[in-house]
Length: 157
Image 1 (cartoon, one colour):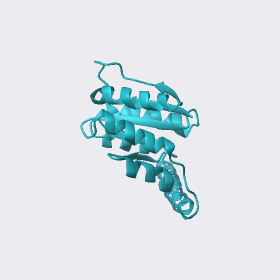
Image 2: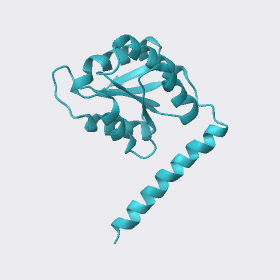
Image 3: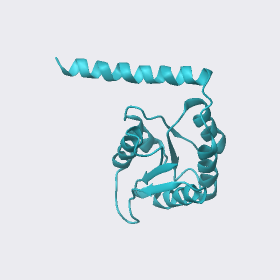
């Protein structure tokens, strides 16, 4: 799989661990940074990864910031992105199996490197189960599309 990964400055070390795990599992990984010591606000890379995954340039995205929350919120602003913040492997696996998440976010102040690798491993190994879950993911997409349509109609006034 083609995976894009990025973080903010607070999570560089964790991002490097996540990227290493994905590569060791045989995935092609593109790391968007930032470099160690480079300041970068999490919304920049959250949106950047979201856009690249939504466009189909990459199959999945991995993100990290201090808690994982801010960067996942930023990614989720991109239509078509279903980003989940996970702090343990079980939720990560179920987020893929039940919610068809396409971006995983972790917090460098929440999980250590070993746990981060386990979370990434479980998330990448999981597959969307479809069935009753597909109907629910479709409902999420409908909400997203209706909000997008409302925003476009409101801006034309």
